[in-house]
Image (cartoon, rainbow, N blue to C red):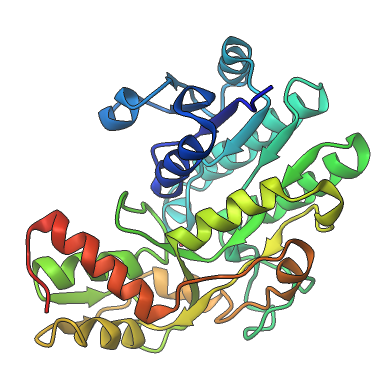
Length: 320
Ligand code: SER
């Protein structure tokens, strides 16, 4: 029987592209999307969709029963910068939603869960370069705390109840389809939009703030790959380090400038600077590469080419 998938938080930056990839693979009717509201009409019109508040167990359960779902991708979350503004909201959404799906798997209602973790599980006491899979995790953001505690619960539900939950610590994700919202790595998406529309960008992180990043196609590839890997090869049941590239605002500026020579950048670090400063600058993902053969395809130059190609079409502006 074909797998029936529910994506919770499908309207977000990653969810929207995951939806397209999973539908191409499994068929539109086998991938049900859901979000907190039906504002994203493109998503609502494109296939089965339900309004589901990820904090509402009964709403999730009703949707799972209605479509006979066996696999859930829980993509709803409040990210790092927004989480600092709304700590309780971030805690409630990020942890309650995870508990609901873990409990549904524990009860045998669903068979498999994907739950994203983040580089935000790390903190200032973590080794900053080539951060290992197993290391000190003392996050200083609410978002990081929710992800760290979530990782512990994933491991616990796997060990105690045999729940098949799989997870990746995403770095900053760069994409052109849906804007990210409320994250610290969002600058690396905004910069491409502004390069095209205004030929100028003011970065909210300083020029030398190096962070781990990844092009969306690699993130989607990793997500599908970890879910399809044989259970025996998934040895980390908390979450896997995942990496592709690391760069700072100056590096990304220079890579864009090769295509848009009159592009200008200025720097005005705000509260997000201290969040970025608490995170690693590069990640050692050798365990993911070993366990389930993860490999990335896009470096910074390839990412810039893809971003400028798609965004110049979107805005109808020619780029050299
Ligand atoms: N992209 C996220 C953020 O900036 C990190 O996982 O909050």
